[in-house]
Amino acid sequence: MIHVTEKAKAQIVALRQVEGKSDYHNIRVSVKGGGCSGLMYDLGFDEEVKPADQVFEDKGIKILVDKKSLLYLLGTTLDFSDGLNGKGFQFINPNASRTCGCGESFAV
Image (cartoon, rainbow, N blue to C red; front, side, top):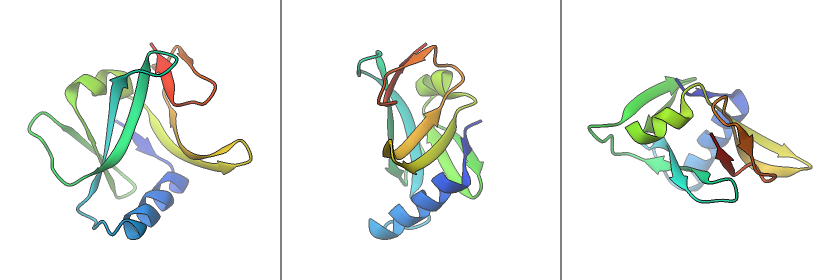
C-alpha cells in the first residue's frame, strides 16, 4: 500500500486543475535508476492503467505502480512540504536505507 497525506492530496487536486487534468488522471509513482544515491522517484499523471500495474487508492487518490517499482515503494507515504527548506512532494519510504540531502534519490 502507498499512502497519501492530506497535504499531498490537496496539492494533487490543485495540480490537476492547473494542468487541465480530469479525475481520470491517476498518479503514477515509479522508481528509476539515477540520482546521487542510486535510485530516483518519478511522479506524474497517467490515465492508462497497464495490465501489470498495482492500483492503490488512499483519500480518493488512485496511485498506479508498476511491479518492479512496487518492491521499493511498499509502505511509502507521499507527502507535500511547502516549508522553508523547500517545496515539493516528499516520499517517506521505510525501505530506504539512505537518502540524499535533497530527498529526490535513495538507496536500499
